[in-house]
Image (cartoon, rainbow, N blue to C red; front, top):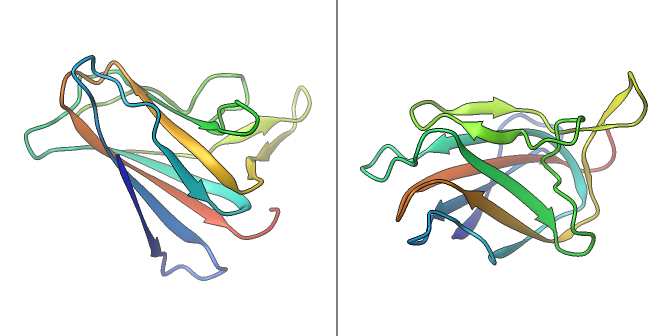
Length: 138
């Protein structure tokens, strides 16, 4: 897996971090830490590769904080927003953390290492995860 950084033309300092992944023979991706800045995740887009390496339908993606071991792609109910993804269409989602029974806040990244984990994608399959991060707390 490789990571490239490019600026988003939306203002407010939001930057897009693209994580291009290819699964191993077991259909998984793990052990590839990338460095991301401190900031707030405002959105995440999951795009299956359409160039002949389309992942298996209902594949799963998480991104674990190397320091704390938590999935920063939580949906507010303890499940990843990258669960059960389509192998045919891109999916655009927002990561939240549950602060109380009815209050949800956007996921804050403290900056540092994060490990993208893909499961059940099929052997030698690929895709792209775009993480949009705004500086500061939103």
